[in-house]
Image (cartoon, rainbow, N blue to C red; front, side, top):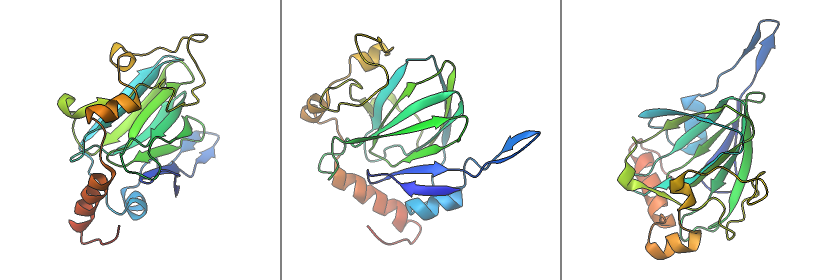
Length: 209
């Protein structure tokens, strides 16, 4: 398993080692110890989610207020998605940037996102099936969103409007732009996210930024 940081602080791409023969393929899709070494603390796994999306569906951009936030470990069990990590933390050096990683049932990659980062996906196939390991339980009052088609973000989704008509939920279609969310005070604060990360590390006796 290889874990490498993405260009956005707190986000990592995980590439497992695949073992295949005539019977099929096996792999370790999650290793808490290796992830903890990379991230600086273990993922406090308290909830697991599954989503199934038709081709062309876009979900996101979602995030949870910090503290407590919600770290996520996302992988694709079936089909393929384009996974978007978006830095919505006000004050971050990479605020407003995004990075895309394809998750599929061939390479079996995963993405880890720290608390405070925005996340979205676009399904590249029908029945694209994702698993989410989460560090906090779902709390609707703490979840926020930014419109996935916000021109300011300019995410290079493989489907665009109006030509390809991406499928959005009513909630995502009504989500504010990044600027509107910032003016509302909805976005996480970069320093608050870093401070919260320090509390997770200090609980384990780990030091560092």
